[in-house]
Image (tube, rainbow, N blue to C red; front, side):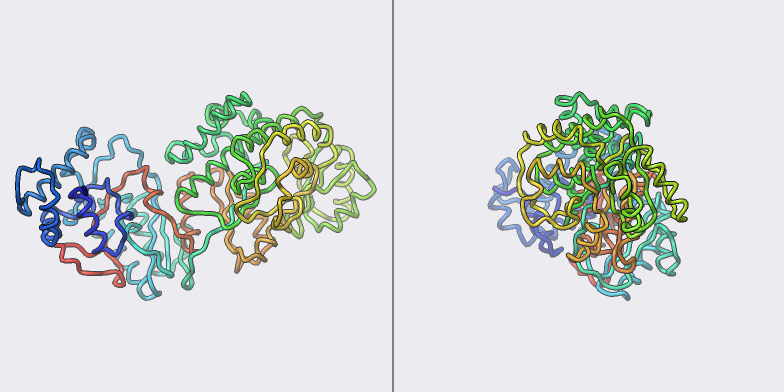
Length: 553
């Protein structure tokens, strides 16, 4: 037997042009901005069917509409006991007549930054909605910004013309809307220059060197999916590798400990895996995956090449075995083309290797200390700039060979499957079209081969990808990728940036994704903050008179 609530949900969904599954069954109707008197109007049409199926416990053979509403209110009251016990009450729910009423947060986390999105069928409509929202915030400065932003996201189809504004409070959101209205440049405002079509980004996973103590700390505190996945990685590593991951990243502030390769590689893998799952929980699915060195292990795991358990086993063994090698090498980034670097290192034979080709003027050399120092002097003689890289070992060079056999033995215990997401290999710099990556041989070659980042990014671009979401603690790949592809047609979007509040960085990234056509599950994104639905202006394109007093849906 369907409950009264189920009947009403179906009717409200019909009015709003949604499916019943799109309306949260747990949200009280009062927090949807629907009063009992409005529910009575809805139930009038359903009275006969409801009377037939209502539970006998109501005490009526043929209940009146008021009895139906009473039943609903009782049902809501019973399911909301915990809320009232926290010190709030039914009167704390914002309603359509009083959007300025704030609900008491209690112990729920509240976001430090807020993201407001707008979408419309054309530019004129988007401009009108911008003006309406700006005027609304000026008139209601006391509303909860989380409620306002969530309501703006909720129940709306994402249309081609889009904009986004972020800020810490209502005042900053209002200022951003004013910048949007006047086309004023602002780092917290984004807008499409034309209509966009729905699309998904490539996930590009950052490599070693991007790590720092405390990376992801705010996400761990605020985002349940990220925290759950980090805890999962922590449990696996603690049991199988004796690595206390969460303590390593969040429990101490020792960069030297985190920079030890045996710790760095599983820490980066775990963080990036947890971030990717967080994005996916928000409805953002990768169209392609690619990583840089260590990052390729996360990409492979996301593509289904191996399980999380096997991925952590591989990357932990890799880091541990490299850590045990003698520290007799170094790496430098040569800011010049690959051809010149190859000519300069040729006399040194196996002592030097090209470790990565990151761009048309960014080639990394790796090898023995003395040989690297000599090449740097030759670069200076040729007026070629170079940058020393802060690494523990000479990765992707001949100095890795002593540990390859031991790594192979671990890799042979892993179960491999064909990639389920289009996947770019570091070794070939191209999309994988067979099971090349599904063998211990590939991951042993990966240790020694150059990272063909530039070729990989170009391969994604040629495959039609124009949107690249960097997943990692620092925007290393975003800068390198932007130097490879045309800026006017390729967009690189970082996730986190050291020194920038993580909530702000995530809001910025989501804003950029949204205005580029990525649809986001705002309900999932907002779940940790338990926001309410309040009455806000709606685009003229969406306005539909429903007969509910005071409401425009």
